[in-house]
Length: 205
Image 1 (tube, rainbow, N blue to C red):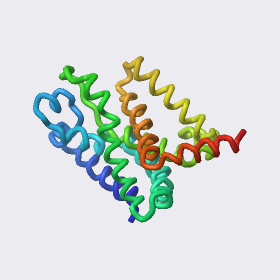
Image 2: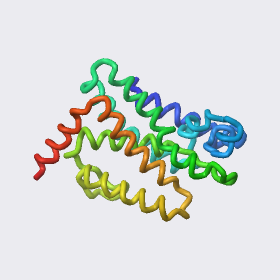
Image 3: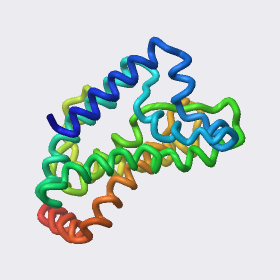
Image 4: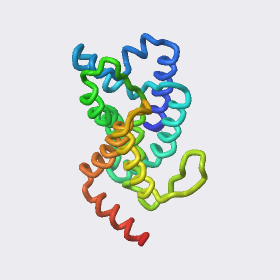
């Protein structure tokens, strides 16, 4: 069984528990004031395995399934036999990394709470784009192929804009910083991937 599938199954099980148990959900979602004031640091990680509803869960797990499998396999090729474990480490670290901005931004807001794997999934997606920049991605439910790099840039600009705008109850900061973390994680471990990325882009020109 792949690491991707294990993460997916665990996330589905934890999310289902959260759907049916409000007390469990409250104790594991990201509430910045409780992280700082009550030292409930586990929330920074556990919140990444919870979801608001079935659609939220489906979209995140679909993206994870589609891009996590090839990224995990590519990790084995790039890093050798322990590549799949590095993929797991990247995913788990991406959850708190994507939430750090949110954590400090809302540290005094007792009414703020967030949950979801979107930050970690964004890390997976953008690490995939780093390794496969010439591939095509498709807009959800719209069968229009778009170059992966172009899609990535548009996604980052959109996430940055919406994070500044606010008001839609979606943690766009987590999407943005999760994406950045996914790319940096692989570049730090294998700087030569930057050269490979540039060469692949040049092949399109």
